[in-house]
Image (cartoon, rainbow, N blue to C red; front, side, top):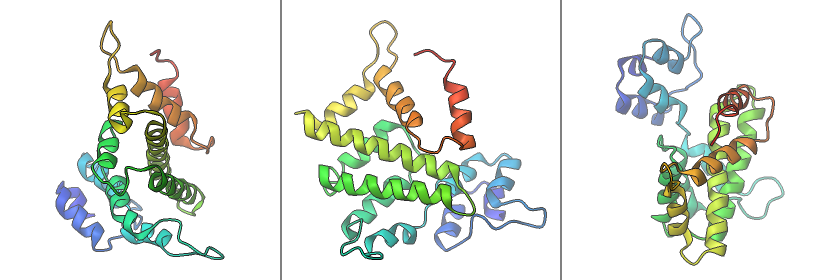
Length: 210
């Protein structure tokens, strides 16, 4: 809790990587993220809320149950973990992270990755300590990966074409309509309608016209 309250993002991240638990509470029943938010250290809150231990992803690199092969090839775990833990959720940033890694920027690897993200999303929602924020993040990245696949299959300019579509502004005012529709579509497709976070997002977005 003390690193989070101090506002030091680097130390907070180091503590998390060393195994600090994010759901442990103090004497007044508050987690580190809740205490950091209370004292206004929102950067540290972002670090904590975006943290996803590598070992939780590595679980999918080993065959489970009756599976003969792992759901995620070992070589994809590092690149995918980098995207999962990014705090910059702009769709262009995520596509650029995909594009910069040759291991990821193909249809088959992206298919494996988005399916694993969907499994993590489900696990976040069904575990005892539900994590709606992380579930929504996994779902959102999964939706972007699926759109990457569409562009890789259908467009000659591939991911460059996707980035251009995301950045292109409307003629009259420069508003990025395609980007806005992609984000709204990902929210609409979130499969857990009872989630408080989803309901808050819908209430915020629904009255706003594109």
